[in-house]
Image 1 (cartoon, rainbow, N blue to C red):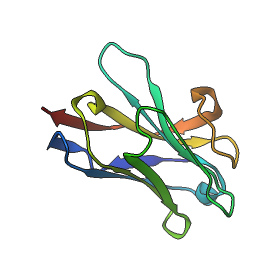
Image 2 (cartoon, rainbow, N blue to C red; image 1 turned 60 degrees about the vertical axis):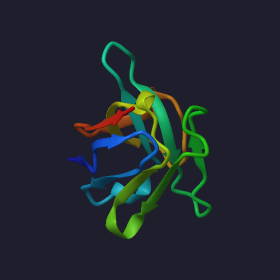
Image 3 (spheres, rainbow, N blue to C red; image 1 turned 120 degrees about the vertical axis):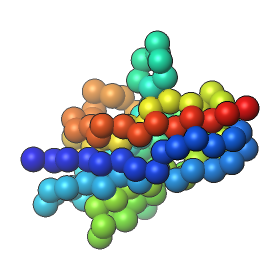
Length: 125
C-alpha cells in the first residue's frame, strides 16, 4: 500500500516563499517519478511540476511556475519537495503530491496513480 503525506502549506503574503514536502511510504516508493499538482475552487486539478527517477533527475514544469518553483527529491528519505518562491495570489490552491506509474517525469494526471490528501497554500496580496 502506497501512502503519500504532504506538509508545509500555509498562509503567506505575495512575494514570499514556502516549501512543500511529500513523504512516501512503501518499499518501492523511490522507484518512480513524482509530481505536484494543484487545484483551486471551481477549477480542474492542474499540473505544477514533475521529477524523474533518472540519474539526471530531469524535471518538467508548468509555464506558470517556471523560474519560481523548484521540485527536488531525496530518495534515501522517500521525500519530494516543492520550493515555491515569489508566490502570487494566483498560486492559491490545494497542492497534491502524486506518484507516477513509471520512472520518467510527465505532465498528465492520467500518468499518476497514487495521490496524497493535499495541503492548502494561500497567498494574500
